[in-house]
Length: 446
Image (cartoon, rainbow, N blue to C red; front, side, top):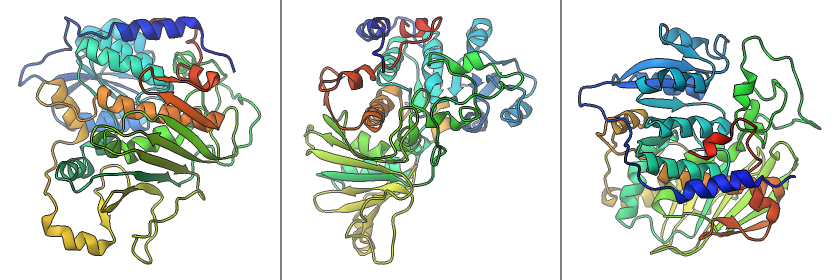
């Protein structure tokens, strides 16, 4: 495993050092003006984001962009938003239409979030970017710096962060119902695409007609096209995806991370890895994050479980006959234990008798705008987004650290001040990852 080139590390340090507020703010719109939005990524979650943003009634769709336009993967989005310009290469779209675009949605593979968002932000364009925020720790660092530098309104696509759990967790934490949390277990035990794979290298298939594979690769290492990469399977590979952490972590641990002020762990331990592999994620992992005492908060241990048979021990407070779902969390406080599932689902105090006893005394909370509407109102200057990059970035970075532990195993010591891994040079190099492909270096300089 090669260390990253000096060029990427130099780009990172230079960009972080220049993270000052720009004199040029993001696009500013009038109260009745609709937001001109380009949808980048037209299949999968990208298609869902496009439809949800359009349903706000506050936007003008002005462009579609996807490397696979003309395929079954993008057909539904192309039909719904027919008659507007279409591009396979986001660079050409920005070159030709950048001044006409107020905001973008970015629903593409993890490794491509970074260059697209950096280009957009540098032109003052507001960004909705799917989770996780980027593929590597340092890419996230640069995206947070760019959000601040270019004064754009940004939102990461962990849509539950605008749901009932967000408002409930905030209200319960402020009222002292959730307090002195010392332990959290989080789990995602559904099957993943890579489960059962037996591979000894990158496979190769004929490139589908019309697919712009070079643009799909973006800044990431070049490998031949394969059906085990596109569409959807890219999440299985270290070079392109962030596994179950990137996919489900932002939906399960987002409110814990934010309202318990977890920040960065000081130690990450690969407690268990079933089927570790050099190229794809293990079949199952148990990863422990240790967070030190923070202002007003005790030290906290967060343990993540993935894999179909790798489940945490149910809490003793769980009612008899009840089981843990395939995705969720258990939060252990000083006086109370809380159980939650995923996305916006609210927490329950367990056992249920305790929840019923406390019912009338629990703080009430109101839900606000949905996640996509919150983004569009943020672009119009009417609301603050709930998952801006300076909030969702550290959450994503926590998962990037978890991915490194899944990949290498062992115990990693992370310096929260310098943001470096101090006891493993290979792990520290993976904070940046491999150098960008030739011709894609510019995004690390913006």
